[in-house]
Length: 324
Image 1 (tube, helix red, strand yellow):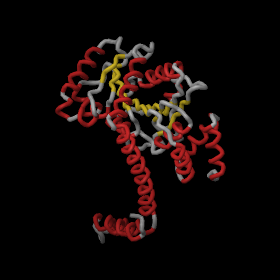
Image 2: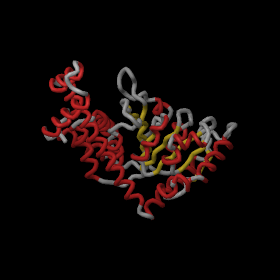
Image 3: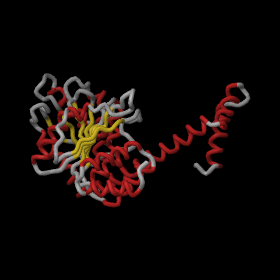
Image 4: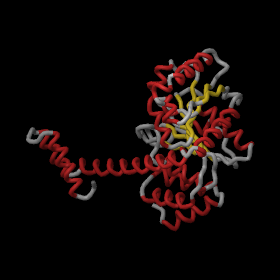
């Protein structure tokens, strides 16, 4: 573990624009523990109001291509964007597969980082909020989070972003399946990618139909407005400028009606909850694998104790020990 002085030195260098120091701090954040908490606190003290844009959608919808084109336009416009690509973990190393990073161009005016989910439910690593805060402290804006986009866990992106873009493409399924997957609930902007392929008109029609029923689900009340739909051709960049414009309009709308502060407070609550859950899980694992947990497991196994009694006894032990 690096000392506090070493971390402070790296942090000062990162703030000054040293990319290698920023990369090292992101590695510290990803590994977790006390060093990660210290870096997170340093970044929080600096503050910042970078626009956090989440991009999610089913695998194969073209999220990485759309993200890469957004990155190109942002840099051309003089912005300093960062991309955090949350990849599935390698089953061998536990690290990110890095597929998204291979499909994007990194340059001196942008920063791309892949981060492993490490098998966490929802696809978003616990380290993501700290990494976003670190990018923000170093002056990157906007900060784009691209998720793995696996099934219903896509909805977790709402906990980490100001604006959520949901990318869909021909072959994604009908409106009912999309609604069941939670896409209607998370989208601030829908991006119909691969619009030059057969079925794109059907996708847009299904989305329009789904949004017309938004008053039934209460989506427009919860999200504040009806999501707009943008057609894109990611491979050529068609429509990407409109996607960026819609994201900027959404941020302005949130700021004007007070929702931006509320969203960011919810984001902090989700971050704190995630870290508490992680710490509690580690405590429970240690208890179960220790002698007390082993004794209760033996008693349940030999029939001298019911499972519910073992759970209550272990829970009471946590409480007595000041853990709960």
